[in-house]
Image 1: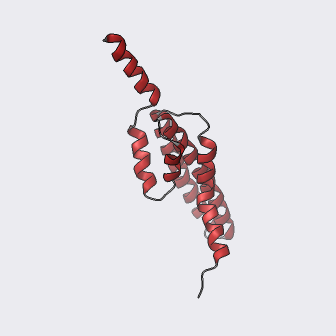
Image 2: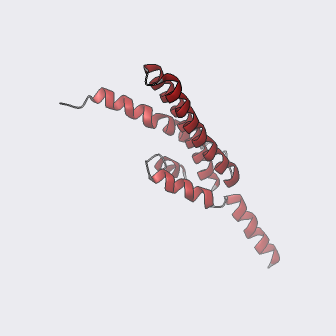
Length: 134
């Protein structure tokens, strides 16, 4: 009763690969503010839920359902983490912050932080207004 390392590593690549790719590609200087970020997060999570429900109802446990489910979750994961990287950049965090968001449970906390943390541009405008009024 041993662990099949090849199967395990393949599973980890499927699980974390799209998220890592999304962070690597998503933090190319592009930003996304809080409102659109919230819409993307809700939209991606809703799409993932609907896709899984449709797959479960349509294929009913066949191998095609596993493949389609894996591909759809990889796409959703890629898009979500790409948006997390862009939002982290907009909020003034470094790239490592988005990579930490890949960890289960930690990602929920960091998404909430990103939903409430203001943009660097917003803080700069507020500071400029304060200085100009002084």
